[in-house]
Image (cartoon, rainbow, N blue to C red):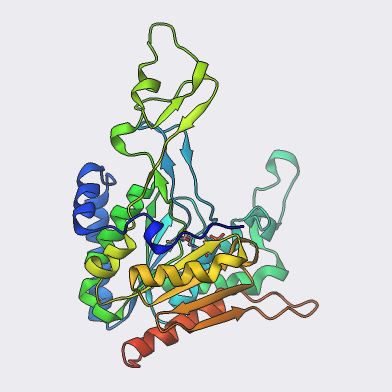
Length: 361
Ligand code: 9Z3
């Protein structure tokens, strides 16, 4: 049986004091001031152009085990959901702040960055002259004929987003840097009021090592002569067990900041969170529970094993609507589920701001 904790048993949601405490006791990302200015200019530009802005979070956050980080706990996510959705938001006329795990999939380049579709496989050599070392001289690299149309389509969309400056890339790695950036962007997006949209697809760690219990240096598996085990034993949160054979990790819950986003950082925006589960028996329960706890507009639920084929929209009016990808016919490519999710999100966003139209290029 799965255990489904009741609301009372869950870790408490973050209050303004928890926010103060967290952001005062954790170091912000080193470049936050610079990124914040970029976000400000991006939002001001699109706000002046009456263009809606969506923050898409994507990829998984890490939890470092050491200050000088060698080891960390990771969260599952390749960034497919976020990167793919960002493309459909751009097509729908939104400007996108793409808050993503560094080196995870990015809009447009994601088509050519998997090991199954390495960009080199799309290329061939044309005008090859000579042999051996001289073979490339005078030659050109071209896209293979059968991929040209598809690549051209992607390239044009990518270039349009670049020229129109509609895509802002903001990388994070740790759960702390993610939270600092989310808060920063949310505050900057306040000027957009209800035209602002948050689409939180990133897989965010629920547990972390608090700074006062974090080892400074790499955790050692054995005794180091002369070092007196200082690092390991100082790190009360992460320490080797008896005789150094086990590593015992004691994690604290990450404060539930979705509440602060809804109430304090982006009170007028539309906020959509994702809920990932592996047990289908508890998915809907967990979606409803998230809505009850955080009072935002929509939770999109998905199961790890079927996330590319079906998701469920659970809204604050207790509606539950499944979106499923139709099965592809032979020889046809499977539809991307994000091509169905994003238009439905946009429809709901339109509705929530009274059907205002979107300004497109
Ligand atoms: C999701 O549920 C995303 O859809 C996936 C996308 C991470 C499954 P991929 O990147 O996967 O396409 O491979 N994101 C939210 C996951 C999450 O951590 N949600 C929290 C929770 O479930 C709430 S913020 O408690």
